[in-house]
Length: 195
Ligand code: ADP
Ligand code: MG
Image 1 (tube, helix red, strand yellow):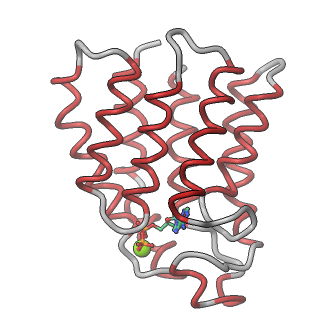
Image 2: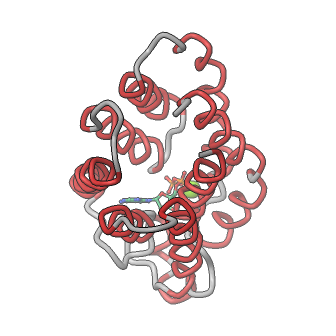
């Protein structure tokens, strides 16, 4: 697995969808999510050549630190914490059980940080089904992980928001996909396509 290629594809997919992410956050937030994710993605892409000697785990840790120092908003610490935990918990050559275990710990760390729960229209509503899909394993896992990310992202449109900025809208957030969930889906689908 070439981590540098996966990082390049995932960050580029976020950059290529900056307008869509902006529109989603304009509908139920403050409109900055696209620019936040593009800023973090560009910072990671600029630093990536300097990380070529790093292990996969150290690269994830460096990405997490970059997210925290460049993205801002709620999503900087959230994506930063996810990446820092994955960097700490993933073994060399992880299988799907290792990925599921590390993602579970990453979700717990984000939950401690942001105090959001499942069903509150945040990216946790994509990460949790993804974790379960990885844990279950089975045939065509890469294709199913991608589909799980896309489907659970779409499903956030049917959730009322009770956490984060969108919570100020309550029921008016219904019908709109959660922007952070869309970012997770963009990252996961780019990684799955590159595998
Ligand atoms: P901000 O909300 O500060 O403007 P962004 O617009 O960049 O930050 O990110 C918004 C996204 O962050 C939301 O769509 C949601 O998925 C995620 N988010 C917000 N608050 C939380 C939280 N407490 N826990 C987990 N994710 C959250
Ligand atoms: Mg925002």
